[in-house]
Amino acid sequence: MKKKKITKGPNKVSKKISQLNIVKRRGHVEVYDERKVYGSCYFACRNAHLSEVESEWISSKVCSAVRKYVNKNKVVISDDIFRIVIEELKRYDNDAAFLYETHRDIS
Image (cartoon, rainbow, N blue to C red; front, side, top):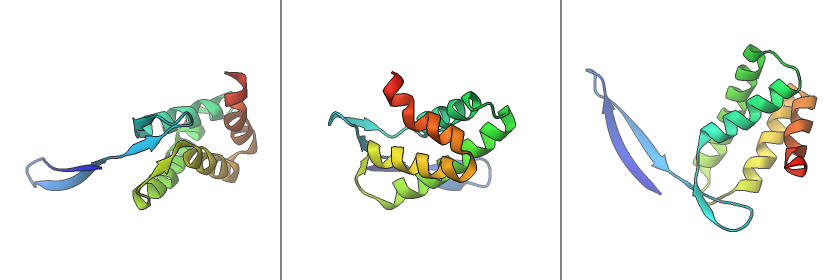
């Protein structure tokens, strides 16, 4: 896990950016990309006939929960992320959670 310190703007606010690797289902390693979590949640919500605003809000909330989990753990397995996303989606919309959970079966 690499960490960089970046400064932005005139007030020099620093942020730590970490590159975290995810162990995928087939055993290969991939860099964690929160946009993938957001996108898959967003489209599950849209397929459940939620509005764009609702879908964006729910996706942001789910990404927050996943981010907290990822930041706490040294090793992250994609199935753990999958499980967390399902749990969080169920808090907001059961149809979206079902669609997210079963999308693997379709593809």
